[in-house]
Length: 163
Image 1 (cartoon, rainbow, N blue to C red):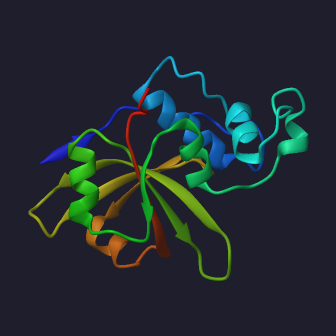
Image 2 (cartoon, rainbow, N blue to C red; image 1 turned 90 degrees about the vertical axis):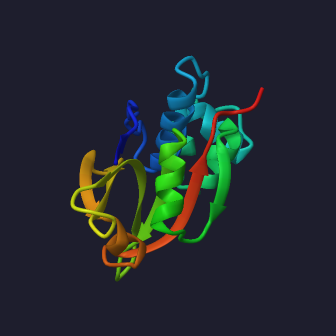
């Protein structure tokens, strides 16, 4: 079984807006005509109105759930889930976002957009886009969920925004 969801990544326009770029990417995945821009997401998350005219004033980190809540695309936010739960969301056509904390500090948001079984159910792989680097990585699904690639500590299931 192979699942690859096609999406267009939006590059962060400010150094601390990876969370907003991911939320805008998710919003546009479900609705290509979505009005949500990074600065509009920052305005909503920070309860401001000036982030689009003066983005440097709003160049602040925030949580992905704040961005996805602003756009209406957050279906679930919680800790790690099973590889089968992630595969099920992908199979339903939903992108899955994750947060990975690195030993020694820092972390990264990833968008899981693909899943494949290469040799059988124990050789499952996730395909993850890392917006901080722009890289796509292929990781062993079981190893990912068991913490072999850093501390996978948060999951964000996404869905189309409700009108």
